Image 1 (cartoon, rainbow, N blue to C red):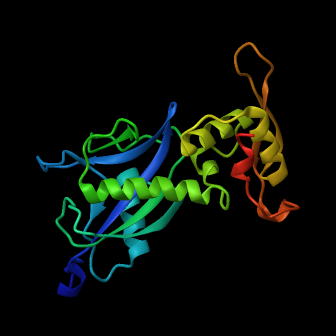
Image 2: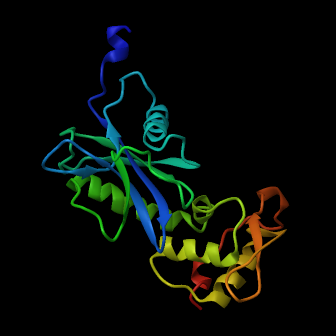
Length: 224
């Protein structure tokens, strides 16, 4: 390789990758060799000639074994807050993977519930908080919650993902009214048995072209 290709960027790319872990939202952390921060968000100082999106995708694929279904830039962070690399600037990306996605074997990565996190470097903690806020803002414009689900799901599954992302319980009837108004899902011919009750019908995300309206779920309807 040429010297130009091996030169590292002075900044870092950091990933905030979420999944659903039982009844909690969880984030992927990397076990570091640093005694000061034993766990960190996956990060790297990429080659200087690699694009930001290219670096983020590569780092995510190396951490998870495959690209997340959704990966988007969150923003740049500095503000003199400490980072494990001691870099001045970090560019954070947010990713979502379906529930049940295992971390790679070997113990270098693990899923941690966001309410039970180890101590993170101050800048990475700010990134994590910013990522959660971004997801909550985006929920009414894009299918964020669907990225945590398999292709088909019950309406209860979907409500559960909204609750994890919003951090609060939702009224079932209100949620389903809001979902119906948004035309975000369509039924399939499949059903799933859930205990002693009636089987639950499976749904899938409705492609935009098949929706009569183009709006998302109005979050102000969910608790009424």
